[in-house]
Image 1 (cartoon, rainbow, N blue to C red):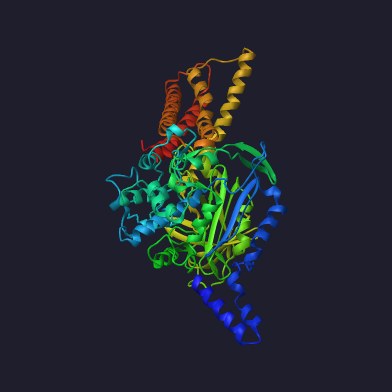
Image 2 (image 1 turned 120 degrees about the horizontal axis):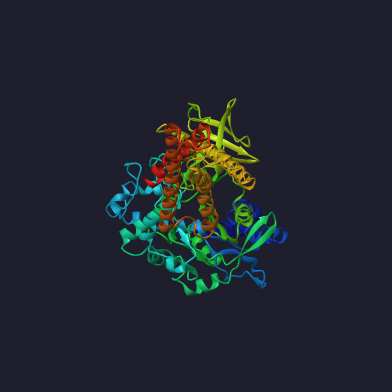
Amino acid sequence: MKMVRKLTAGICAAVMLSTAVPLTAFAKNEDAYKTPSGLAFDKVGDAIEEYAENNKKEYTAFSAAVVSDEEVLYSGAFGEIDREAGTPADADTCYEWGSISKTMIWVSVMQLWEQGRIDLNEDIRTYLPDKFFGHLKYDDKITMLNLMNHEGGWGENFWSIQTDDENAIVPLEQALKASEPSQNTRPGAVSSYCNWSAALAAYIVERISGEPFSDYAHKHIMEPLGMEQTAILPAHDDNEWVKAQREKVKCAAQSAPGVWKEAGGQLTYIQLYPAGAVTGTIGDMAKYAQSFVQDPCPLFEKQETLEEMLKPSSTIGDTEYPAFCHGLIPQISGDQIYYGHSGATNGFSSNLMFDPESGTAAVVMMIGSGEPATKIPELVFGEASVPEFEAKAPLTGDYSGVYFMLRGVLHGPLRMVYSALGTTPFTKDGDKYSALGIATVTPLGDGTGLLEQQGIRMLTALSEQDGEKYFSVGGMQSYHTDGWMLAGLVFLVIYIIIMLIGFLLLFIKLIQRIAKARKKYTGMGLITLSQILRPVVIALPVLCMVLLYSHQYGLTRWQGYLLCGAEIVLMLVFAATAIRSLTAIFKQDRGEAGVVKYVINFLANGFCVFAMIALELIRFWGI
């Protein structure tokens, strides 16, 4: 790109000296100094500052930078990183990258591929210790390309992947083993974004390179680019300056549109650190982004390696448009494809996007989650759009059904809560499908659809495998049908009804006790205890989600074991109550109660035992 511009400038100079119409020749070169959106390089700063001035309610603080392959076109900081103290954001403000951190993993993998030290199509077990995985559902080969395309089949974590206790941080291998999620789909079947599998790829880099991933990233990525203001370890111990700067930032979250609520330091430590813990200044992130548009790219020994990295590694449905490019996430705008990744942590969000064609890159990091993270890249690259294309074949099959999010906790005590939140009925409406009545999916060809919702249009992939149907939105968020999950929701509804009836019966018992009109019956204490404990089965996971997920995102092993033990104890109480009710029926040992009371108690407690065994103890705990 640099050579092209010098050559073009030389030609322009020659034309100006030898002809009387230099302006025409100069005008042809104007596009070389514009961003893909058509914004002139010298107007980039004005556009960003105008946005920041006119949209102050959309952020508390953010920093942004735009670079070409040759220079920094603009870099600026806006707002306050501590509103109580009135501390302004500046060039030294350190933000968390979130999932943009994953791009360092994929760069590392491509560096090793360039050196012939890793085969992207080899089974990753080749590079891992024996029996590394604890509970794979499928024996299929899992490749590095599967990890780069988020097609390893894993869901999100039930076990904790972050903590607010710095002393609880463990090495990457230990963190991976302690937080292995369930494998929900066959490898390669469908893309479903997964933090754990990305961190697994970083561990494979460790295994091949022989050095901790943090050391590898510093030595082979940050140091060559001069990124002296960036840390990657969970507690930022690899850069004390970054650690001190990060502690100055006070986070905030939107409690309502334009209303920000203080959220404190939000210092949580990401155990799977390669997948989201990189932290640093906007200047360093700009250096990193700029490396992707330089020729030669300083990240690789050969420019062909970057070119290979930017090739589609998976496509959306039957189209030629990429869902992933070796870990990078493409954005389609008209007939152009741009590359990058977005990111978010408990207290920050960010975006990185680049275009080798124009030699332009943009980065933005902000406190909380809000408009700047998406609007700044749009100023440079334009809005995302759905391209026109011809379907290769008509859609076959019926994709109606009840779908559930694949990226979720699909097993364990929290599964029903997340499943209920992510339930999406998919009904056929003429030649389209309706999702919850708020979005439509129009089949465009075999395996491809167009999702439209409130002005948003995105390509979707539709597929069927192993008796389940899938649809994926842009390769990131995927949904699937699951008979067990649907049965679980039915059981959950029935259980809630049983619980409400139990509350009603307890209230009646209280009134009877007050009125001294209570009738004594056999097993009264045990039956009353089960009525009191039934709500606990639902209350426990809800409490875990509220109390623990806000700061550690999942349970530790000991918390999980205690919860499992509590569930088993509760199940035994329900089982004992059901057995006592059954014996009372057959032995006619009922005291003053009628047989109907014992039948109802037997059915209610028996149902609870069955639901807990089928949906929890077998489906998750493996008991």
